[in-house]
Amino acid sequence: MGSFESQIRGVVDSIRHGHGAAHALAVADSRSFVRSLFLASGVRLDVFGFLQTPRHITDIARRTGCERLDRLEAWLSVGVELRELTRRTDQYTTRGRRARALAGGDPLLTAHYRSMLDYQAGPYDELDVLLREPDHGRSDLDAHARVIAEVSLAAAPFVIPFLRAIVHEVKPARVLDVGCGSGMYTRALLETDPLLRVDAIDRSDDVVTAARDALATASLADRVELHVGDIREWQAGTVPEFDVVMLVNNVYYFDIRERVALSQRLRSLLRDGGALVVVTMTTPGSIAGTHLNFMLTSQQGAASLPRSGDIERDLRDAGFTRIDTHKLVPTEPFIGITAHR
Image (cartoon, rainbow, N blue to C red; front, side, top):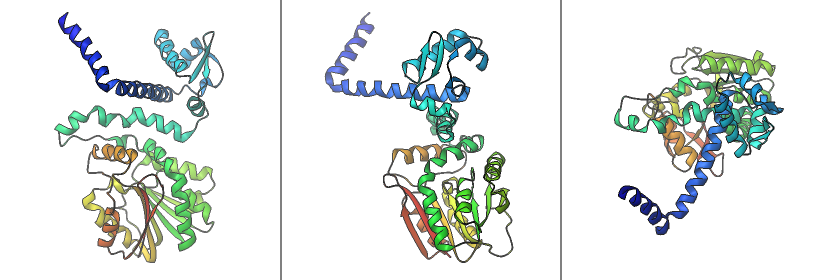
């Protein structure tokens, strides 16, 4: 009894000593957390599109393979309380802005919520192991390469104008897109200049397959050569072939000790007067950046975000002389760098 009473007194004292505001913030945090969990699990269940029209709970059970109707009803009730779903006589349909966007198949939002359960929470859950076992690292970069590529497209509205400006300035005939991901930036370049040809390379078979499908759908596949491989080992031509080499949102996957050698390698692929383009978040300076850096350092290997000035220094050490840095997002340490050979 005494122990229970002391716990109650501790709660009361906490509120009295000014922690009430912290408690209120914690409640708000937990509501946001529940909303994220609900939406992420719904994406994984692939159910929001089905709920664009009202569905009876038994239809939802059949759609999801549910054998425990009480659990399904409990989960759906969470969505109702969050106002992401509407319930009328055991029929449910999407209501909230996020749920309706997911139901409509918004690819970026779908990838964003899927990534929360797939890999974003993992490093925090495993923090004790990651700190105590130096040889332990996660494999999210390989296991979830396609989702990671899709999530990274959140930066596209800022990156694409920067890349298009480079095309107009350099007027390249041939471009190499290193770590091409979904092919979004390859497509942007091809649409900017109808005479441009692009080689694109990525380490993931799944990612390259998705890029190939997307470019074919856009009727651009005839001007692209897609490759699966590691740029450090890829056998290009015997003479420099490219007017522009792009490294967009992926320099941080390379060990910091290897980045000068990487820059030298990419410089060797450029024709005289060509430009290496690097786009990256840096750290510190934002919650998004520090979160990404933590996830990167939690992986197998030695991935990490560069700090301010790191990339420019590496490029100078690699032999580049004219280096220009542009801040692409006013509120974030997100930069675009051009380095001319």
